[in-house]
Image (cartoon, rainbow, N blue to C red; front, side, top):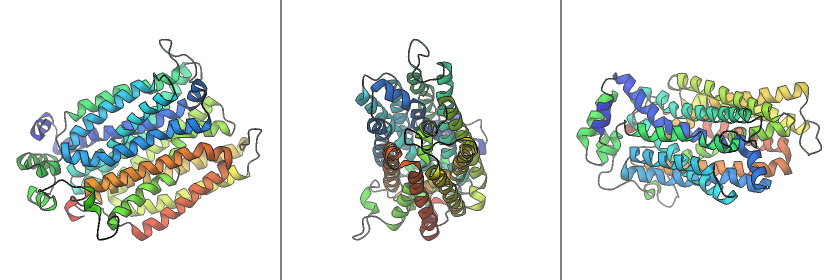
Length: 468
């Protein structure tokens, strides 16, 4: 597929509609990112029962896919610089489809983990390619809003996965352990529900043009010029050529300066990526049904509360899309961090002071349960308009063209390793130190994020990628 063929397929669209279309097509990888990582939520208890697994084994089953994501993120940027952004999207589509199919028909816990790890590699690749591609095809004045489509797609994917889990469980009589369609357990269908979107991702990748910056690096300047004109970008081929090293591909050594491991800007990117996870957001989306059941809610009510959180996440991401190019990236990050400190702190106090049941977990009765639910959803709200979308926007645009592919690989891998550490530690923390101390730890990292943004993050609103 060439750039001109992708552009011609969108020839009937206006300039604005076309750039929204190709950005949305790339962001479909974000939808699969969200779906694949959240679908495990409704299956955790059923998997534990089916495999007879311990808390540690279930923690590994949920979290080892995230190491696959770290691998996918680390190599995706380099691979995209070698074969193109669009071809990496196609490869990710195939990996998503195979993972969804295999995860629903495992022979044991270890081959289940292997299928999930394959999906994790696809998730990691999608997490890097979508923001990079969207940043590279978007006009500067629209890049924040279009870049936020990645996070919008992620949270929609999370929401759809949670709704699918809930509907399938309800259709199977209220539990993922029960038989659903064709004599197969409901938890299997939860994974198979990802297949249509995985295949669609591969189809839409055929319909979009290659990144103009990749085309310039490949000496396909006429094709790059055509894409830039089609999306209404102010950048010229000459400007892009001046910032792209034509004689060799970007590599990790580009990130090294003197005797330091990485350039300062790369450390800032790593910090943003790690802190987005250390505030504990994915505990809500991976384990919330387990969490709410642990404090006294039924399986159906726990899944319903989880769906509500997913809906709130979508709404707040729409808020971010509306205001990220108006208010800027840094103010949204700071406001979101302060809100998360307050809500996580409230949950730490609630869970830490609640009476303890026979299983050693806090019991939230009556009003205090409602307060905890409100605090959790306000926490999601604060994350949803700030660190959720803005971190991905900044990673897509904060690095200059020379180091973007390599820097995104490092920052993306760091994000997934942080995700893994938080996720694999939660079942152990739940059983050993309890929810109060766990949320106290996430509160600490939210507080750190306030000072990190104030000290190290620079505003990128309105700048072209060539000005970075």
